[in-house]
Length: 287
Ligand code: ATR
Image (cartoon, rainbow, N blue to C red; front, side, top):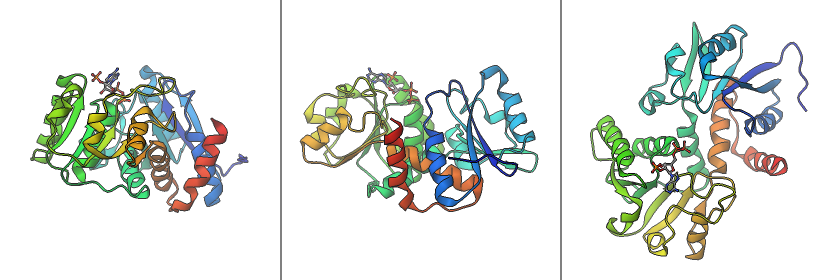
């Protein structure tokens, strides 16, 4: 248990709603592990109060904030500066105080990269695809672009949003990072051996038996699956891989590492990877 006293460092979560967040569980373990006097407080922030909330958190000397839905892009004008990578993505999930205000970062993106390294998943320069073209896909797509992906694919139910995301990334990086495809057009993917990142909301609890593509032929084209969903622990998407004897991973380590990277920025303390099993145990107890 955290003991609050006059020296407790306070960090807030700005979101609407915030009721279901797991971040307090993660940060309690990190604080205990690193011996910090640190408290993580969810602060329900209505969109119309966002500017005041940012000012208030800074005025009250918060050591940092997390930002979640629906504020990740809307908060940008209220920051004193923004990390170049977060600016490219156009979304911020971490605020760190600096002279005159908060600087914004995106640890959803860097956290996914660290989670993949932790899981031993390497990003192939070619033969990479993403399912989905929403907010989660955007962070994944920029991470893959940063890692040199070329001629990858973004598959989505709606072609228009996949095309928009591809155009945005290809323009930013000045090369063909991704090409758009409909989910139903997966048979147009050349060859096989793809790393498939699942970033749609399909398969999320309680729809455990659903996957964005329900045909085995798609999974035959893939060699490894990375689902950004962590509830359930094994999604239908992941099960397709298991049934073909191929590795797949859920989004739990992405969630944890976005928290670890944020915590490191707020406290200046490096967090060793050996804390991860402890965080997973705490999250399982909480579930
Ligand atoms: P998030 O922030 O979690 O990424 P989002 O921005 O609403 O959420 O994006 C949801 C993604 O899941 C989108 O790619 C969406 O596809 P569309 O662009 O066609 O809406 C995808 N998605 C949601 N429900 C789906 C379904 N039943 N079948 C296929 N894709 C679906």
